[in-house]
Each structure stands twice: as structure tokens, then as C-alpha cells.
Image: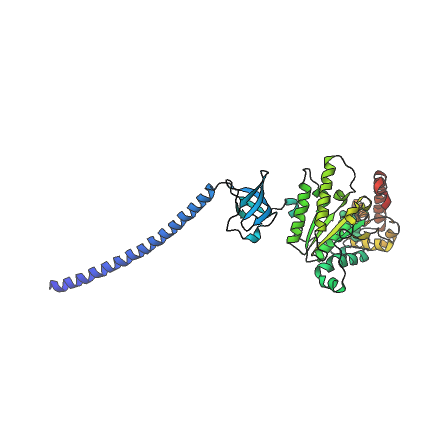
Length: 393
Ligand SMILES: Nc1ncnc2c1ncn2[C@@H]1O[C@H](COP(=O)(O)OP(=O)(O)O)[C@@H](O)[C@H]1O
Ligand SMILES: [Mg+2]
């Protein structure tokens, strides 16, 4: 009677206990996971806390490497110290000039920190290639060929120079009147090559503080070496490269220090190295002779004012997108003797303005003539102001 009932009840009890056991086991597993998660979190926060409690590290640079574990460092505070280095740092990383972090109390080297480049130098590196191509340059066919042979070819195919047994030039100097397309040419080279292209305007290298210009030059060349093959383009070179005169102002002396550093860096190149220099100037007469010695900027590419055929070329390029009506560019070229590429471009833009002023959507020959006339007036005014540039006009 009740026996069967008991049996059934007992059976139900067992069922119930088993179910509870399973639930408890699941909860246990969950709690264990949660526990692990929280332990990890505690661990992470402990580490973070330790990092935040860490004393500040001094910054210094290695001046000399004595042996495996000892180096001479120069901290930002001034004097040099002989210190030990952490075992975690591979000895190969300990080289003269490397920036390192130092323990504040013992000044031992804790870690190597990556080179910091001056923002101007980094900005100078053209990561986006300039969108100037050789097709955008008129009249300079021969100069384009020369710069390709002297700069591009040795970087792309150094073997051919080795085989022939000649040394490709280290540096090429583009020389010509303002507005003749020197900067344009360098940008087209940059566009055309796979090499890293670093452009600086020399005046940006000249700084207010003593030694800064030299440091910038050093960083510039470091960057070029690190990203080789590369082309360094120094525009308006005369800003640092002017002939050394017995100068008394500290500003002039700083310019010279920068120049000296530049020369030192250039001389450090191997002839068949994978860094090429391109300079540009419109004042070659003022350049320090040291810059143009063999092994430095020793090849000169002259960028002349365009002749008549060249002017037609350049006019074609700059009027390509313009709505011209019965225009003879030949005629414009005839009356623009002495105009640079930049002058021609400006004339063309002016002619467009004349057309707009008269409510037309196209440009007539008379607009171009007026544009040229306007540029002529401007050119005359400019050449009266700057006696120095007279020689090019
Ligand atoms: N040979 C040329 N062909 C086409 N455009 C030119 C040429 N020379 C100069 N220009 C025009 O004049 C502008 C200024 O030239 P740029 O290369 O800056 O002269 P610079 O020789 O002073 O460096 C260029 O952006 C371009 O529009
Ligand atoms: Mg220029």
C-alpha cells in the first residue's frame, strides 16, 4: 500500500535532488568563471597602479659604449655619467647617439626609446606624393632626362653604374631664375619614383636657437637613411648655403653652423649609397663654394628661361583646361621673350580674369594679350625693386 507510495515518493526525491545538484554545479561553474575574471581584473589594476607609482625616468643619450653592460650617457641635466644598462636591452641596440630612459636614482639605462623627430622634419617628408608629373612640365625635356639619369637611375639601378665603373653623383643642384620650374621638377621626380622623398625649404632649417639647425639637419638625414632609398630635396638652398663671410651676428653664425652640419652629413655618404640629394637655388653666385665641391652638390642642372618653342609648350599646359576661342598661342609666345614658366602661367590666369570681367565664358586672343601686358608691368616693377635678380631678366 504505502510501500508503493513511498517508492514513488523516494523516486521523486531522488529526481529533485539530482536536479538541484545540476543547478548547483552550474552555479559553481559560473562563480568560478566570474572569480577568474575578477582576479584577472585585480591583477591588471595592480599592474596599472604599479606603473602609475613608478618614479619618473630621466632621458639621456648614449655618448660612448664601454662594454657589454656599461655605457657613458649624457642626461638632459648636463654632465656625463658612466652607468650600467638593464639586461633586458639587447647590446645591439646600445649605440652612440641612441636615446634612452634612465633610472632617476642610479641613472642606469632602463630602456631604449625610439628616435623623436622634429615635427618640421616629419612634416617635410611627403607621404602623399605631390601630384605633379613630367607631363605638367613644359620646355624642360633635356633637364628632365638629366635629373632622371642622375637621381632616379642610380637609386633604381645602381648595378649599371657599378658595371660601367663610374660613380653616380651624390648631389644635383638645380640652378635657374625664379619661376622656371625647379620646384616643379623636383616634385615630378618625387611623383615618379618609389624612393622616399623628403623635401625641406632651407630657410626652415635655420632656427632661432643655437644648435637647433644642426640638430634638424642631423634628424633629416637620419630619417633619409632609415627610409632609404630616399631623395632629399633642399629647396632655396641659398638660405643656409650662402658664402661664409666674417659674420659677427649670432644669427649668421647659427646659419653657418647649420651649413657645416649639412656638409658633414653629405660627406658621410658613400658614393654608391642609396640617398640622393637635390638642391635648388636661384642665386648660385652667392652659394658657398664648399657646397659645390666634388662629392657634394657637384652636378649642376641649369634651368633656363624657356625659348619660344618652350613658351608654346608651357602655354599649352596651362591653357589645357581653358575655354579658348580662336587663340594662337604662337603669337603669345612671340611677345613673351624673357618670361618664366611662372610668368606665363600668371599671364594666362590674368587673361581668364579679363574674360570673366567682360561677362564671357571663353577666352579670346585679346584677353591673352592683355594678360601678358599686365604681367609685363608687374615684371618691370619687380626688376626695378630687386637689383640682385637683374642678371636673369
Ligand atoms: N617649365 C614649366 N612648365 C610648366 N609650368 C611651369 C614651368 N615653370 C614654371 N611653371 C609654373 O610656375 C610655377 C612656379 O614654378 P616653380 O617650380 O615653383 O619655380 P622655381 O624655379 O622658382 O622653383 C609652377 O607651379 C608652374 O605652374
Ligand atoms: Mg622654387
